[in-house]
Image (cartoon, rainbow, N blue to C red; front, side):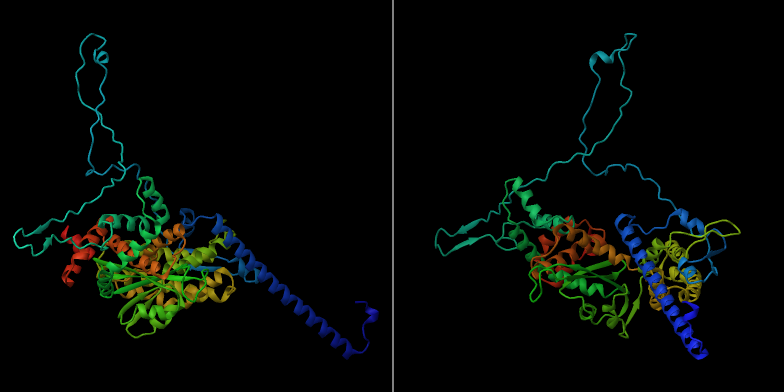
Length: 529
């Protein structure tokens, strides 16, 4: 502004200066907000690039863990530096162990497979030595190849003998047909087991199965296959009821849910989301995995699925479980895998590390420090994997609690210095919000540090969904839930799914009492075998 235009009156000049200062302050505030927004957008771009092109594994590399060889490590986050905070953040962290997985190489073929011996001998003229003597056999060299014979298709003819009296001709008696999984159907128990395993274990859509049967001149329309699966789900419902009872006998139930598209859901558009819920629990030697379909993800569904349950409940931070967790008989656990995942995302946006002026070494970011603390907690769990529940509890009290105390102190010191809406700020806030739930796992040796077991159990459904994309009707979705429950529970108890389904589909139609059904529980079949 030209000095000649400035007012000569002191009060007017003072007012003008105050107005200019206010404008400068407002502009400076807008610049800071724009800078924060730019930083936020840069983080989102980095996250999207990592999701699209980066590795999906969350394991820490040996180079990263090598950053923590010193007793004390310093980290200055770039976000704080932009705000004018130049002080270093100190964290007392021990070196985390890292074991590189050994290469397994080619594994030997199963010894119980039948062997077909194919001998290869020298021609007669090559069995004569250069000196003229006949060569003697001194041994043999054996190499093995894995061979396969395509599936054998056959027709089972149920021949029912008929008898009649040649004297009085009162009537005809016919031998009874054994109870079948689907009455008046031409599907044998083994065929139903094959189709069920192909779709729900191997993620094969029914349309592809239809094409496969056509190649061997067998016409089985997709609609017929779908109807068979629905009928099978009705057949196994008594067994699933026992699964539900056994699920609640264990000390903890782990829950998760994933979206599912159902085209013909009443009062919903075809594009809307429905959900498949999973519950995992039971005794250590009687694992139960149950799937349940629902058109909603509301907390009312979680309340219904866990109604009457008393014990520990482990989930992620989805708010639908909050109402259930407030009940006195349920103790809610958090998941350290979800907490760690937040810091892995923050690590992507804080790759650049400043140099320590004294040592010249790279200083770890705050995301690195948090991940290292959590890695220590997992290393302790790895040590206690083969211990009894009581020994695991003592190990956690001795080693895990001190690490948790250090992590909590670091969290409370660091969180106020980080922008809340940044990726690192969100990770710190998640940890702060769920801290009470995250440390409950140390209260018992029967509890898990994370909810990964439930997520691993739901993964086959997610893989299958990528292939068959959707369910046509709610009946089909409920059938999928029932048959996934049967297969995953069998796998959880170390049974081969196809063999288990053959047993269930053959014997369950003949069951006349509760004892007959209990015999078909996976752990009972395993014990009998």
